[in-house]
Image (cartoon, rainbow, N blue to C red):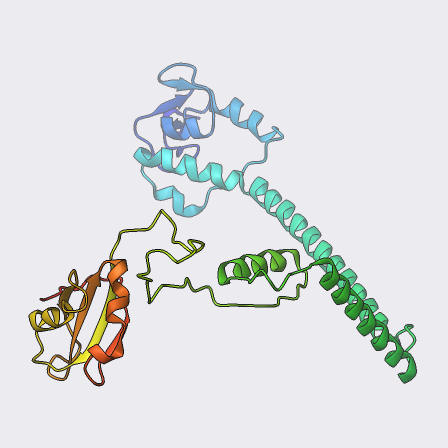
Length: 314
């Protein structure tokens, strides 16, 4: 074989004509350096290679080669790295397919387990329905037996109430106030017990409307306490005419109680009536309790100050 015939052989891998490249020492074939690297052929030097011997050895190797598609034959040598990457993906497709088979088998096992759980759940539900459909084994009570049970329950409840009422003694001489009643009911409710409450009276503190002026009795057996409060008594006089002034009312009441004080209040309807606050010492409070000194249809009551203080006018 002449030297020219040897040079006409195409590249060992891409089968293209090569003018400059790595020459084989046996057949004289010129091949691209990148193609020889892809075929994993070892170079003898920078310009020579023994491709005939190494290609025959690679055919007997157990490594399975994958044919390169024909569309890759037109790729330039500068893109050899991309071709190498794609070739590796093609070679690894078997391992990818094997992993997919393993995943499919695992999913099949999960599906079988779910089917088994579904069948067991259905069997349990059917057993429960069968148990519920069976007639009850509890005997029904006849009407006389039911009435006797009701009577026994009522007697037991009455005995409990009577025993509780006997255990709690409330004397009628000690009246129960609203505060004491609220506390007792709260305590009894927290203990879930019953209590009979009797002699309920309003919790109202009595206030004096009259103060005696007699200093001493003839025999001296009746007398007032030494600790007499010196605070003033206050009264509320209302239903006066709108034009009545506090000065005129004070002059009139000073005839009976010299130390009286009169203060005009704000009325809801000042064009219809007027009201006054009357203050005087306790010893003089009885002097103004005579109805004859008050005009007709005028009312006198105890004075209760409102919670919200309102401006007062004289």
